[in-house]
Image (cartoon, rainbow, N blue to C red; front, top):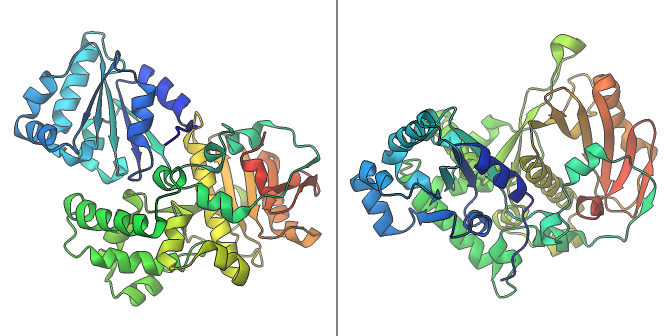
Length: 419
């Protein structure tokens, strides 16, 4: 397979040099091991994996001896660290000892297929000692080898009229996925996805989350797949799956922690704006091809025959592209959806906000041309946010990047990867 540059690489390299420990989390098979091994040469890194039975057994048997055996003159990369929870305290001790001696930089680079917030013991042990980064499957820019971070570009660039060649939307969605699928034409995607889900349910759900009936997670995923981009009605999902509230919340949390799904919070500033906003979250799948697999639909067939569903797939794809972009940026960025209670249904799909309140809004339209009415929702978003509103765009499948009013632009989807 060819190696494609990852937009997170620069941030990861800087972080590992400035923090005692770095935790790189992300979905299984999204390229974490490849990234860290490419980033760290054998001369300055020692690589171990807890997916290796011998290494895992040694660490479990005597965590103190295991940590003591690691070289002091290299950064120690420990892959799938969540598989040996007993090592958490020893990692903390090692970091504290080195920091006391003034040697507390670049000690450990930990990777795992679970969100750190799903690993409370590790998070608690390493609080203040560890930076947390997230790697996703390939972005559209990565698979195009363009190194564009479209959120960074959108924030910094003064948009001007430009014409793009129309993109093959289904092709780019199919390509922006897990590396093994994206880089190998011989991989049967359906077989791969089936095995992928199987591994997560039969191994991670049981070992990591202590779930006794992992097959019910599949039922939950199937139910959630039909609700992408909509406000999540938990009661309806529980009724459909037969799960009680406690079990439902546990299983949904696992899906988020295992990077199968992620939730987008509602945007709200009620104290400042004297407005009420919808409180419900929206749910998306981390990989749109995985979503298609769970729906048992072929994306080419969907594009030809089911424009409504294709619109949801397009929205899911953009949600993942935003998540991938902001994960690689310095500082804090927050993604939410804008949905005022009294906005007459004028919701905006995504709002990306900095700590200082500066905001960019993104609406998604599965259309090759736009009209004035397509900007009504984002106009309300702009007028509500006010001076902190930097710009708003409607992403569509057409060819022209053109202005549509104050701080508003029609932007072709190609902007995600083209300079």
